Figure 1 (cartoon, rainbow, N blue to C red):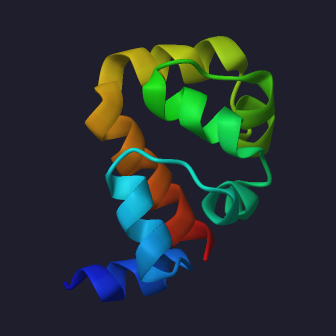
Figure 2 (figure 1 turned 90 degrees about the vertical axis):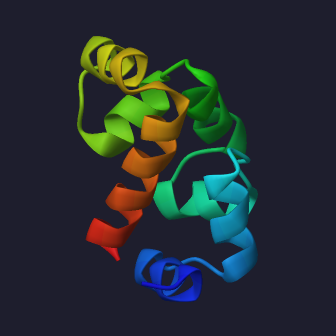
Length: 87
């Protein structure tokens, strides 16, 4: 599957997709989650927020545990998977 196809399935433009897989949260992608870019960036960087937990329907402590266990590449993949599933 090409990157453009994955981006389309996630509802992202190619630029936003490339930002996400490179660990950069932008406003467009954050908007897809209904959060601010800093909440998305903090999750990528290792810290779950109450806002992210609420939007994902997960208790904050469980989201933080998930983030700790999957690491940065896993967090990016998780976010991409959520976008694909919800699009």
